[in-house]
Length: 111
Image (cartoon, rainbow, N blue to C red; front, top):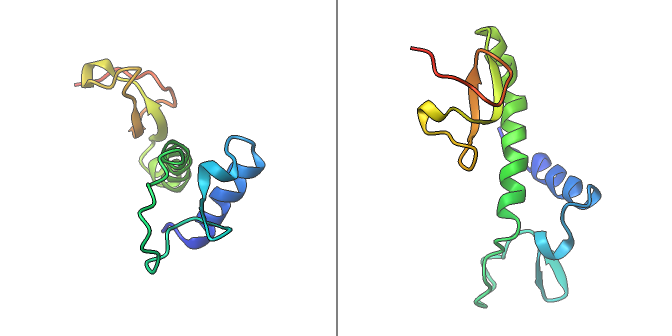
């Protein structure tokens, strides 16, 4: 489902939105900015950790938009960042995405 165009949109939005810069997103190799390290590059280049959170936030929203129509078919909401303390989903460890009966971030479990 995630396609190359989605990846391109992520990079465009990150740069255009001002929440990331080129150094946060791309490897600088041989005077080029690359999203991935080519297999033929044998240099020991550390993994970019700076974009992990950016990609995480972007893909959580992307998944929510993808799954929201399916959730609606079951009279549910696809909600990002859900807190439900009864399930161990606390403020510092929210659910990336949950199907809920309300469109709220703070949920109560129902048995």
